[in-house]
Picture (cartoon, rainbow, N blue to C red):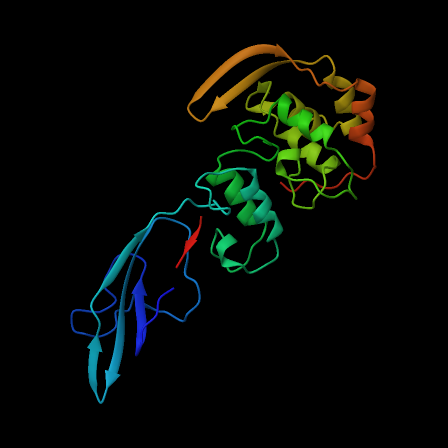
Amino acid sequence: MLSVAQGTIHYTLDGSDPRDPGGTISTGAIQYTGQPVVLHQNTQVFARSFQSVTGLDGWSGPSSATFTVLPGDFNGNGLHDPDDINRLFAKLGSHDLVFDLDDNGDVDQADVDYLVQTILDTRYGDTDLDGDVDTGDLTRAIIHFNGADGSGKFWADGETDGDGDVDTQDLTRAIINFTGARADGESTLGRWVITDKLSTREVASRMDDLSITKRTAKRTTVNDQHVPLTIPTHAAHLTRVLADGATRKQVSTHTSFF
């Protein structure tokens, strides 16, 4: 927090001097109001205090600091993990600027998209944030499935939309984003849902004996190997889990301060 005994504080976030060479306040300077200044990227802050006494303008000496920020590290542990997504989900609908990653004044789905797809460079359904949606991710979502009226579930459980449950919508989204067998950039499971328009019940019935090409993508290295798709859940139970409950819902296609 910035403070001064007299006058007002003016600062910039680009490292430039808030005082123009002629002694006036720079057009790029921001007056400090006492509210936290939220930073979503590495920033050099340059500040001075200004006061006018009987027509004599006066500036303090400069104060400058560089802040190193890991965007999206909402729990402040210096890395990205599922808890960062959970914290952002909990702030949806608020105006908490710490979580407003796109700086539009509110916390909404666009901020979640930016965190998941741009900052973390992954897809919805990647429960362990290893850069892919694979059989391990689907297995976790199936194990933690609790239906549309459930609660107490988080990203690492397969919860992808911030409503606190793992339901048919979450499983469908993970299936669409599955990065296993790909044909022209589209996964086999995704094709079943999007192109063939199969229900989740029909997808489940096909999953038991599906042979896939598993893609393990670690940002720059991709290793391909043929493996069977196995889910440690009986096929009949899997079908019930995916179809249970019923209603299919439409799948919608650190921050630092001083």
